[in-house]
Amino acid sequence: MSDHKITFTYLSQEDLLEAGCFDIHMAMEVAEKTMLAFKDNRILFPEKIVQIFDQASQDRINCLPATLLDEKVSGVKWVSVFPGNPALHGAQNLSAIFVLSEIEKGFPTAVMEGTLASNMRVAAMGGVAAKHLSRMDSEVIGFIGAGEQAKMHLLAMKVVRPSLKECRVAAKTIEEEEQFIEELSPLFTDMNFVSAKTHGRAAMEDADILVTATSAQAPLLKAAWMKPGAFYSHIGGWEDEYEVAQNCDKIVCDDWDTVTHRTQTLSRMYSEGIISGADIHADLHELVSGHKPGRESDDERIYFNAVGLAYIDVAIGLSMYQRASRAGSGQDLDLQQCMIFEHPDIMKQVRL
Ligand SMILES: NC(=O)c1ccc[n+]([C@@H]2O[C@H](COP(=O)([O-])OP(=O)(O)OC[C@H]3O[C@@H](n4cnc5c(N)ncnc54)[C@H](O)[C@@H]3O)[C@@H](O)[C@H]2O)c1
Image (cartoon, rainbow, N blue to C red; front, side, top):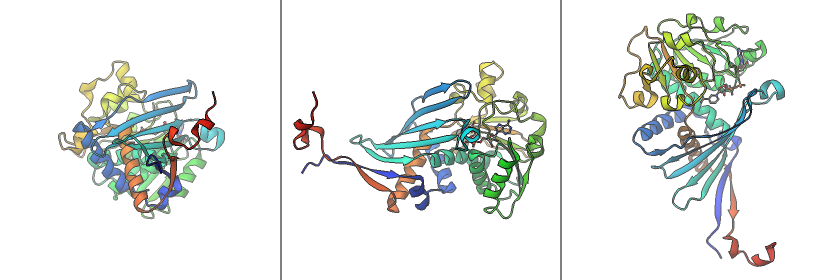
């Protein structure tokens, strides 16, 4: 019998959930460890491939590869972002699938649902940033945007700042705010949830932690709403006026170089010549490694922008796959039983 069989594990979202992979602590630990590996040049991180199907809607499917040299794993996230999905179809904006391969023979080891890992990665990076940059005594968190990223972000923020007592949320519709509150309030019975009735100002003014996670392309967050000492996590595209960043004492990115190639508010400011690398305090890995300080005073306003780093996605995906494998979750599927010409009677299958 041939020993050229290739088997991989297929993991659905439900397999991952059953195996205990919806673990924000795990995602943050993996994110921190992987940022340090990146700093030590132990990561391959090629530029992502972007395919935008419609400039007006920004419907897109992107392909984001990365390799973790120490773990000997290469992976890719195939992710679609269709911002109109919630309004048009009542469906999620983002959906992702991951493929992981080992890099000894180069064979695939896992094909897995990736939306969970991807959304947890965004939140984990925000959580790690908040650990270094928000006030320890933060009590009020405000959101503009009540979608998938916002919900996940609250989980990470509450993990790093258990002092949070109030969560205010503004979205495009009151129904969405209510849904956010209905879904998350049972988990955080020590928090008071407030629907801002679509008014960004009511959600954000005087909050200790501000989060924008919208599909809008507009300056929704105003600088005047951000008090001294506040920490702002920017997740979406263009969703704050330029003065927000200009008023901040520190700007930190997941990766400034990557930000300069994207379309977030900071990217726009960079391409318009309003800010440069000299205005950026640090990339997040420099805070994690202790090479640069995080928050240094109670009064600093601090801006954090993560555009998304595929190697953190792949690392979180890998840790989920490992946990799921230990739990016996998922299905082993055969990719092939043997090499092509080893199949008995293969010549009968050939069509010329
Ligand atoms: N930075 C990253 O790494 C990263 C990763 C994934 C997604 N994203 C981005 O995060 C954003 C949110 O993604 P999501 O999956 O949560 O989307 P979603 O569609 O689930 O939620 C979007 C939210 O934006 C709100 N919104 C839209 N226009 C608004 C307006 N004018 N005023 C107030 N609220 C408004 C909607 O009401 C909704 O609550 C998207 O822009 C997405 O591309 C960023």
